[in-house]
Image 1: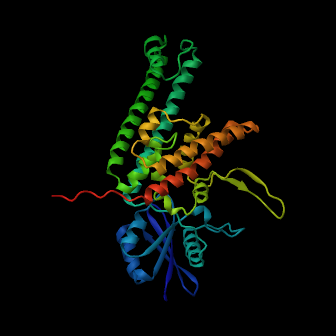
Image 2: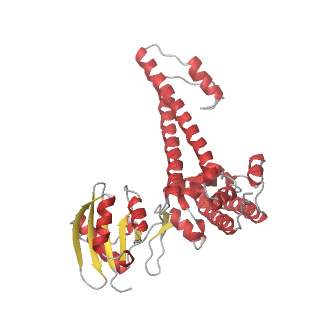
Image 3: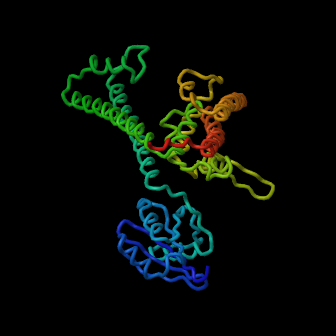
Length: 377
């Protein structure tokens, strides 16, 4: 298309620096506008016809409202990965104007990597599962504070009582006492924080149950199909779908593994090939939930009561993939442990391969025909 203009936006909470690059010509700055919907609409009208504009900005804390607004105006917009924007070596001057110009220049050259942008409903589901993940982190911290406080003052449960079980809580609430009022106040506050965190997680998990019932049928089918895998219950399946969106957007399973950051880093030159730990250059939320599920594959293949209930109603193809995953990943775990790898390294490797089975089941579920709703009488 002729007369295409490439626009780079350096977006902040209150302002947006704008630069434009013509298809053939130099890059120039257009100044700074307020980060408001009416200002953005006015800018688009000044720049020309929406179908002739190509706009990009970096992913960041301002989220995707700007992307959704530009898309509704008919402008092609891409949100790019900030860590993959080329930077000249030795460049020590960074301003909003220069950042916008660099975005416009690199976008015109095709040197930017776009990220997947969810729609509003998908973003809401992802916010919910990340809120639960944050609540679990807060619960762990609250438990650590209480347990270390008790340990510091020599308060220990009876032998054989596991931490955070019902018996443990009975001991905490009925047997633990302090003589100093200040310590009693501290103890009560720590116990309250642990109970508050547990109630918070319960509320969020109930909200997830409600949200799953309202998602589109295709997404719900993927969530249910992923639960056929060992170690992937509803919360894990919802987290995976919320972080990935449409799984079939990955052409191969290896692309999904790379997206998670669970692949090894590499520094090779000539005949020398050097690989190290995992790159972690990917979605940390996805990587965490998958490696957590991978611990289940250290056990021999089998279908317990809970897994059988989750697999009920699933297609034979999905159940066959899940059964194959159990056999392959268990034998892989045994083989890597036999050569002396640490347990954490082995489980990380199992999690990477588990992503391949997640990809296979996700694609299978997305391509399966969805049942049609009966027409209203």
